[in-house]
Image (cartoon, rainbow, N blue to C red; front, side, top):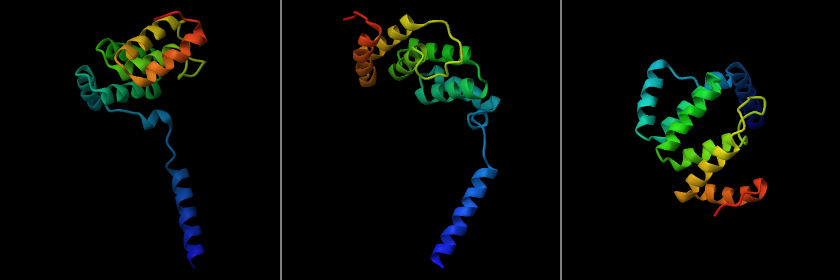
Length: 139
């Protein structure tokens, strides 16, 4: 009886997961009202709001330029986590290769160094590794 119950439950969950499958575009969608709220929070330095907007622009609107511009804005405000994320995108590590951005290796390394200067541990570790990868002679 217990096995039968589990099997039925599993099948129901499987059917529901297929029925309610949503795209990445839909998963990160924001209403225009929500977008305004997140823009206001991002301008105040809220990292979560910045990332929410970034995923909306990048995945839902598929606007690479707008999403990178947003990360640059937050990076200039001194947000070390965002500086690290921006460096990863500029160094072509986290976005699909088919999306074209001009070679931004130097800018990516700049933001990685800025994040490391603010004692962000993932940036410090990555900077040590990247020196070898790009044969950089900093420090």
